[in-house]
Amino acid sequence: MSQEVDASHIMQVAMGSWAAKTILSAVELELFTKLGSDGMTAPQIADALELHARAIPDFTDALVALELLEREGDGKDALYRNTHATAVFLDKTSPAYIGGILEMSNARLYRFWGDLTEALQTGKPQNEIKHTGKPVFEELYSDPDRLAQFMNAMAGISLGPFNALAEKFDFSEYRTLCDVGGATGQLSILVAKRHPHMRCTSFDLPVVEPIAKRTIAAAGLSERVTAVGGDFFADALPKADVITMGLILHDWNLERKMHLIKAAYDALPEGGAFIVIENLIDDARRENAFGLLMSLNMLIEFGDAFDYTGADFAGWCKEVGFKETEVVPLAGPASAGVAFK
Image (cartoon, rainbow, N blue to C red; front, top):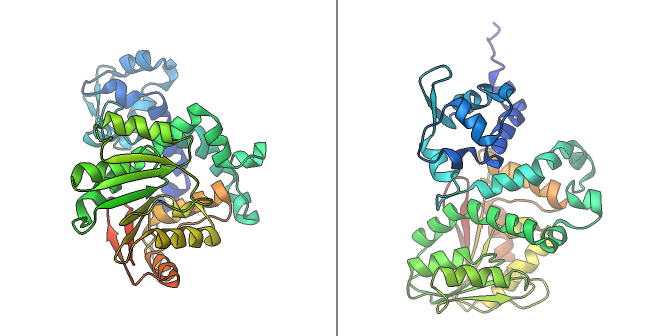
Protein backbone atom coordinates (compact mmCIF):
# COMPACT_ATOMS: atom_id res chain seq x y z
CA MET A 1 0.00 0.00 0.00
CA SER A 2 1.47 3.34 -1.02
CA GLN A 3 1.99 5.93 1.68
CA GLU A 4 1.01 9.54 1.18
CA VAL A 5 4.09 11.75 1.01
CA ASP A 6 4.39 15.48 1.55
CA ALA A 7 6.82 17.64 -0.42
CA SER A 8 6.60 20.61 1.95
CA HIS A 9 9.87 19.84 3.77
CA ILE A 10 11.70 19.40 0.48
CA MET A 11 10.34 22.71 -0.81
CA GLN A 12 11.10 24.53 2.44
CA VAL A 13 14.74 23.42 2.33
CA ALA A 14 15.20 23.74 -1.43
CA MET A 15 13.81 27.27 -1.54
CA GLY A 16 15.37 28.26 1.78
CA SER A 17 17.52 30.86 0.02
CA TRP A 18 14.37 32.96 -0.41
CA ALA A 19 13.80 33.16 3.34
CA ALA A 20 17.52 33.63 3.98
CA LYS A 21 17.80 36.60 1.64
CA THR A 22 14.66 38.15 3.12
CA ILE A 23 16.15 38.26 6.64
CA LEU A 24 19.60 39.25 5.32
CA SER A 25 18.10 42.21 3.45
CA ALA A 26 16.10 43.17 6.55
CA VAL A 27 19.34 43.21 8.57
CA GLU A 28 21.14 45.16 5.84
CA LEU A 29 18.34 47.75 5.82
CA GLU A 30 18.46 47.83 9.66
CA LEU A 31 14.73 47.13 9.87
CA PHE A 32 14.92 45.49 13.31
CA THR A 33 17.06 48.34 14.68
CA LYS A 34 14.72 51.01 13.32
CA LEU A 35 11.72 49.24 14.83
CA GLY A 36 13.41 48.99 18.22
CA SER A 37 10.68 48.74 20.83
CA ASP A 38 8.16 50.66 18.73
CA GLY A 39 5.47 49.58 16.33
CA MET A 40 5.36 50.91 12.75
CA THR A 41 2.89 50.54 9.92
CA ALA A 42 4.01 49.15 6.58
CA PRO A 43 3.97 52.62 4.94
CA GLN A 44 6.06 53.98 7.83
CA ILE A 45 8.53 51.13 7.39
CA ALA A 46 8.70 51.78 3.66
CA ASP A 47 9.44 55.44 4.34
CA ALA A 48 12.05 54.69 7.04
CA LEU A 49 13.84 52.13 4.88
CA GLU A 50 13.35 54.00 1.57
CA LEU A 51 11.54 51.05 0.01
CA HIS A 52 9.62 51.03 -3.27
CA ALA A 53 5.84 50.84 -2.89
CA ARG A 54 5.84 47.37 -4.50
CA ALA A 55 7.84 45.97 -1.56
CA ILE A 56 4.98 46.62 0.86
CA PRO A 57 3.25 44.70 2.38
CA ASP A 58 4.89 41.54 0.94
CA PHE A 59 8.27 42.17 2.59
CA THR A 60 6.89 42.86 6.06
CA ASP A 61 4.22 40.14 5.91
CA ALA A 62 6.79 37.58 4.75
CA LEU A 63 8.80 38.41 7.87
CA VAL A 64 5.64 37.89 9.94
CA ALA A 65 5.06 34.49 8.33
CA LEU A 66 8.71 33.62 9.03
CA GLU A 67 8.11 34.55 12.70
CA LEU A 68 10.67 37.36 12.50
CA LEU A 69 8.14 40.15 13.05
CA GLU A 70 4.84 40.38 14.90
CA ARG A 71 1.82 42.19 13.45
CA GLU A 72 -1.10 43.77 15.28
CA GLY A 73 -4.16 44.09 13.10
CA ASP A 74 -4.67 43.87 9.34
CA GLY A 75 -4.45 46.20 6.38
CA LYS A 76 -2.46 49.39 5.93
CA ASP A 77 -2.95 50.47 9.57
CA ALA A 78 -1.54 47.24 11.01
CA LEU A 79 1.43 47.68 13.32
CA TYR A 80 4.61 45.62 12.90
CA ARG A 81 6.88 44.97 15.87
CA ASN A 82 10.03 43.03 16.63
CA THR A 83 9.59 39.58 18.12
CA HIS A 84 11.33 39.03 21.43
CA ALA A 85 14.13 37.19 19.61
CA THR A 86 14.71 39.82 16.91
CA ALA A 87 14.65 42.57 19.55
CA VAL A 88 17.39 40.77 21.48
CA PHE A 89 19.54 39.52 18.60
CA LEU A 90 18.94 41.78 15.58
CA ASP A 91 18.57 45.28 17.05
CA LYS A 92 22.02 46.89 16.86
CA THR A 93 21.46 48.66 20.17
CA SER A 94 21.18 45.30 21.96
CA PRO A 95 24.35 43.96 23.66
CA ALA A 96 23.41 40.49 22.35
CA TYR A 97 23.34 41.61 18.68
CA ILE A 98 24.36 38.78 16.34
CA GLY A 99 23.62 40.60 13.10
CA GLY A 100 27.31 40.99 12.28
CA ILE A 101 27.52 37.44 10.94
CA LEU A 102 24.37 38.07 8.90
CA GLU A 103 25.84 41.30 7.53
CA MET A 104 28.94 39.40 6.46
CA SER A 105 26.83 36.61 4.99
CA ASN A 106 24.87 39.14 2.99
CA ALA A 107 27.99 40.98 1.79
CA ARG A 108 30.15 37.92 1.06
CA LEU A 109 28.95 34.41 1.72
CA TYR A 110 25.52 34.47 0.08
CA ARG A 111 26.86 34.90 -3.45
CA PHE A 112 29.76 32.49 -2.88
CA TRP A 113 27.30 29.74 -1.91
CA GLY A 114 25.88 30.06 -5.43
CA ASP A 115 29.01 28.20 -6.54
CA LEU A 116 28.63 25.29 -4.09
CA THR A 117 28.25 22.78 -6.92
CA GLU A 118 31.62 23.81 -8.33
CA ALA A 119 33.16 23.54 -4.86
CA LEU A 120 31.74 20.03 -4.45
CA GLN A 121 33.14 18.98 -7.83
CA THR A 122 36.57 20.63 -7.58
CA GLY A 123 37.31 20.88 -3.83
CA LYS A 124 38.44 24.46 -4.46
CA PRO A 125 37.38 27.60 -2.57
CA GLN A 126 34.78 29.83 -4.19
CA ASN A 127 35.40 33.09 -2.33
CA GLU A 128 37.60 36.11 -3.08
CA ILE A 129 40.56 33.95 -4.12
CA LYS A 130 38.59 32.71 -7.13
CA HIS A 131 38.14 36.27 -8.38
CA THR A 132 41.25 38.10 -7.12
CA GLY A 133 43.80 35.34 -6.52
CA LYS A 134 44.23 36.50 -2.90
CA PRO A 135 43.38 34.20 0.05
CA VAL A 136 40.37 35.25 2.11
CA PHE A 137 42.32 36.32 5.22
CA GLU A 138 44.71 38.40 3.09
CA GLU A 139 41.69 40.15 1.56
CA LEU A 140 39.97 40.67 4.91
CA TYR A 141 43.02 41.89 6.81
CA SER A 142 44.09 44.32 4.07
CA ASP A 143 40.86 46.33 4.23
CA PRO A 144 40.09 48.01 7.60
CA ASP A 145 36.35 48.17 6.89
CA ARG A 146 36.10 44.52 5.91
CA LEU A 147 38.30 43.52 8.85
CA ALA A 148 35.98 45.41 11.20
CA GLN A 149 32.95 43.70 9.62
CA PHE A 150 34.62 40.30 10.04
CA MET A 151 35.54 41.00 13.68
CA ASN A 152 31.99 42.14 14.45
CA ALA A 153 30.59 39.05 12.76
CA MET A 154 32.78 36.73 14.81
CA ALA A 155 32.01 38.61 18.03
CA GLY A 156 28.27 38.36 17.45
CA ILE A 157 28.16 34.66 16.65
CA SER A 158 30.59 33.83 19.47
CA LEU A 159 28.96 35.77 22.31
CA GLY A 160 26.50 33.07 23.39
CA PRO A 161 28.98 30.16 23.31
CA PHE A 162 31.73 32.22 24.97
CA ASN A 163 29.38 33.29 27.77
CA ALA A 164 28.33 29.68 28.23
CA LEU A 165 31.96 28.54 28.44
CA ALA A 166 32.78 31.20 31.05
CA GLU A 167 29.79 29.96 33.06
CA LYS A 168 30.10 26.18 32.62
CA PHE A 169 33.83 25.45 32.66
CA ASP A 170 35.48 25.16 36.08
CA PHE A 171 38.29 27.73 36.03
CA SER A 172 38.91 27.48 39.78
CA GLU A 173 42.05 25.33 39.36
CA TYR A 174 43.61 27.68 36.79
CA ARG A 175 45.11 31.14 36.93
CA THR A 176 46.03 32.11 33.36
CA LEU A 177 44.39 31.80 29.95
CA CYS A 178 45.60 32.49 26.42
CA ASP A 179 42.94 32.84 23.73
CA VAL A 180 44.59 32.01 20.40
CA GLY A 181 43.09 33.94 17.49
CA GLY A 182 41.47 36.14 20.11
CA ALA A 183 40.29 38.87 17.68
CA THR A 184 38.69 41.65 19.74
CA GLY A 185 39.59 39.96 23.04
CA GLN A 186 35.96 38.99 23.64
CA LEU A 187 36.55 35.56 25.20
CA SER A 188 39.36 36.83 27.44
CA ILE A 189 37.12 39.69 28.60
CA LEU A 190 34.18 37.41 29.39
CA VAL A 191 36.32 34.93 31.33
CA ALA A 192 38.06 37.73 33.26
CA LYS A 193 34.72 39.31 34.18
CA ARG A 194 33.23 36.01 35.34
CA HIS A 195 36.37 34.83 37.16
CA PRO A 196 38.22 37.68 38.92
CA HIS A 197 41.23 35.47 39.74
CA MET A 198 42.02 34.85 36.05
CA ARG A 199 44.59 36.73 33.99
CA CYS A 200 44.05 36.44 30.26
CA THR A 201 45.99 37.02 27.04
CA SER A 202 44.34 37.59 23.67
CA PHE A 203 46.78 36.43 20.97
CA ASP A 204 46.24 37.36 17.31
CA LEU A 205 48.01 38.92 14.34
CA PRO A 206 49.70 42.30 15.00
CA VAL A 207 47.14 44.13 12.81
CA VAL A 208 44.42 42.99 15.23
CA GLU A 209 46.27 43.89 18.43
CA PRO A 210 45.17 47.58 18.53
CA ILE A 211 41.53 46.55 18.05
CA ALA A 212 41.75 44.15 20.99
CA LYS A 213 43.52 46.71 23.18
CA ARG A 214 40.73 49.25 22.60
CA THR A 215 38.04 46.69 23.42
CA ILE A 216 39.86 45.53 26.55
CA ALA A 217 40.37 49.11 27.73
CA ALA A 218 36.70 49.92 27.11
CA ALA A 219 35.80 46.95 29.33
CA GLY A 220 38.05 48.33 32.08
CA LEU A 221 40.15 45.16 32.19
CA SER A 222 43.56 46.30 30.95
CA GLU A 223 45.18 45.23 34.24
CA ARG A 224 44.10 41.59 33.85
CA VAL A 225 43.66 41.14 30.09
CA THR A 226 46.54 41.70 27.67
CA ALA A 227 46.57 41.78 23.86
CA VAL A 228 49.65 40.25 22.22
CA GLY A 229 50.48 40.26 18.51
CA GLY A 230 51.92 37.22 16.78
CA ASP A 231 51.42 34.51 14.16
CA PHE A 232 50.19 31.21 15.57
CA PHE A 233 51.83 29.26 12.75
CA ALA A 234 55.20 31.03 12.95
CA ASP A 235 55.49 31.78 16.68
CA ALA A 236 55.27 29.72 19.85
CA LEU A 237 52.02 30.32 21.70
CA PRO A 238 52.16 32.31 24.95
CA LYS A 239 52.28 29.88 27.87
CA ALA A 240 49.16 29.64 30.03
CA ASP A 241 47.20 27.20 32.21
CA VAL A 242 44.35 27.21 29.68
CA ILE A 243 44.67 27.62 25.90
CA THR A 244 41.47 28.43 24.03
CA MET A 245 40.64 28.63 20.32
CA GLY A 246 37.22 29.92 19.36
CA LEU A 247 36.18 29.09 15.77
CA ILE A 248 39.85 28.75 14.81
CA LEU A 249 40.64 25.07 14.30
CA HIS A 250 37.92 24.58 11.66
CA ASP A 251 39.59 27.16 9.38
CA TRP A 252 42.41 24.75 8.48
CA ASN A 253 43.24 21.41 6.90
CA LEU A 254 44.24 18.43 9.03
CA GLU A 255 47.99 19.14 8.86
CA ARG A 256 47.51 22.67 10.17
CA LYS A 257 44.95 21.54 12.72
CA MET A 258 47.54 19.15 14.12
CA HIS A 259 50.16 21.94 14.17
CA LEU A 260 47.84 24.10 16.29
CA ILE A 261 46.91 21.26 18.64
CA LYS A 262 50.63 20.45 19.16
CA ALA A 263 51.38 24.16 19.71
CA ALA A 264 48.67 24.29 22.38
CA TYR A 265 50.06 21.14 24.05
CA ASP A 266 53.55 22.66 24.15
CA ALA A 267 52.28 25.91 25.69
CA LEU A 268 50.42 24.17 28.53
CA PRO A 269 51.76 22.95 31.88
CA GLU A 270 51.00 19.45 33.15
CA GLY A 271 47.32 19.51 34.13
CA GLY A 272 46.57 22.37 31.74
CA ALA A 273 43.49 22.47 29.53
CA PHE A 274 43.11 23.05 25.80
CA ILE A 275 39.62 24.20 24.81
CA VAL A 276 38.17 24.63 21.33
CA ILE A 277 34.81 26.34 20.86
CA GLU A 278 33.22 25.15 17.63
CA ASN A 279 29.95 23.96 16.11
CA LEU A 280 31.12 20.41 16.82
CA ILE A 281 29.36 17.88 14.62
CA ASP A 282 27.69 15.01 16.51
CA ASP A 283 29.73 11.82 16.29
CA ALA A 284 27.05 10.05 14.21
CA ARG A 285 26.94 13.03 11.81
CA ARG A 286 23.13 13.06 11.77
CA GLU A 287 21.92 15.91 13.97
CA ASN A 288 24.00 19.09 13.97
CA ALA A 289 22.89 20.42 10.60
CA PHE A 290 24.44 23.82 11.30
CA GLY A 291 27.81 22.23 12.04
CA LEU A 292 27.67 20.21 8.83
CA LEU A 293 26.64 23.25 6.79
CA MET A 294 29.44 25.23 8.44
CA SER A 295 31.83 22.55 7.22
CA LEU A 296 30.52 23.07 3.68
CA ASN A 297 31.09 26.79 4.23
CA MET A 298 34.73 25.98 5.09
CA LEU A 299 34.94 24.18 1.72
CA ILE A 300 33.66 27.31 0.00
CA GLU A 301 35.99 29.56 1.99
CA PHE A 302 39.20 27.51 2.05
CA GLY A 303 38.82 24.32 0.05
CA ASP A 304 40.57 21.85 2.36
CA ALA A 305 39.32 23.24 5.71
CA PHE A 306 36.54 21.42 7.54
CA ASP A 307 34.52 21.15 10.74
CA TYR A 308 34.74 18.00 12.82
CA THR A 309 33.21 15.80 15.50
CA GLY A 310 34.04 15.50 19.17
CA ALA A 311 35.47 12.06 18.41
CA ASP A 312 37.74 13.55 15.74
CA PHE A 313 38.98 16.13 18.24
CA ALA A 314 39.60 13.47 20.88
CA GLY A 315 41.62 11.34 18.49
CA TRP A 316 43.82 14.21 17.34
CA CYS A 317 44.47 15.39 20.91
CA LYS A 318 45.40 11.93 22.17
CA GLU A 319 47.75 11.53 19.21
CA VAL A 320 49.59 14.66 20.36
CA GLY A 321 49.76 13.48 23.96
CA PHE A 322 46.72 14.83 25.82
CA LYS A 323 45.49 12.42 28.50
CA GLU A 324 41.72 12.80 28.31
CA THR A 325 39.03 14.79 26.53
CA GLU A 326 35.41 15.75 26.93
CA VAL A 327 32.71 17.67 25.05
CA VAL A 328 30.73 20.37 26.86
CA PRO A 329 27.51 21.60 25.15
CA LEU A 330 27.38 25.39 25.09
CA ALA A 331 24.76 27.49 23.28
CA GLY A 332 22.78 26.44 20.21
CA PRO A 333 24.84 24.23 17.89
CA ALA A 334 28.13 25.16 19.61
CA SER A 335 30.11 22.98 21.99
CA ALA A 336 33.49 23.05 23.69
CA GLY A 337 35.99 20.31 23.04
CA VAL A 338 38.28 20.10 26.09
CA ALA A 339 41.58 18.23 26.26
CA PHE A 340 43.58 17.86 29.48
CA LYS A 341 47.37 17.52 29.50
